[in-house]
Image 1 (cartoon, rainbow, N blue to C red):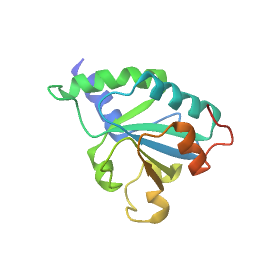
Image 2: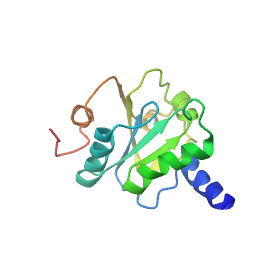
Image 3: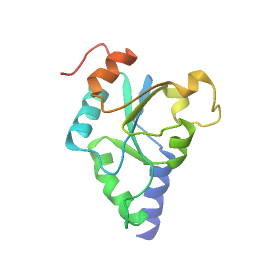
Image 4: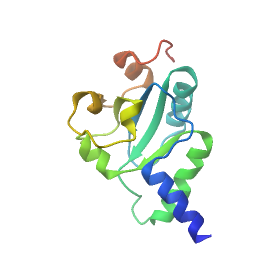
Amino acid sequence: MMWQVLIALIFLLIGLNKNAVSGNVLFYFFTERPSKDVVENALWVQKNCDVKVIGVVRGVLEGERLVQAVRRLNKYQKEGFEIWIDPTLYDMFSIEVVPCFILVPHEFAYSKMCVGDEEVMGKKICGNLSIKYVLERFKACPQSRD
């Protein structure tokens, strides 16, 4: 049982994704738990655009153990919305406020080797924004969701 949790944790932390798309990846930085709307919008984007949405949280909830966090975030993974616990991405992309969105080409999304390269750093927009506005601003999806 313990080794299964460890393997799930490793997959969550390094962000392996068998179902990744070939287009762009939209990192969605937020605190704590995603709302129902966030999950629905992420799933809609993945279905209707060539964009993979990956939620990113800085760490676990106060008083929460890492194993508990992995279990909590795993339920979103089962729905198709991948969430990473990765404080290094906050530093890499200079995230100071959430929510924040970063759009990067898929080939760079799973690698931190070229930090500083403009293409790798992607497009960034932060604030209390709708997914529709973000996609329109990034010109990342031919369809838009109201």
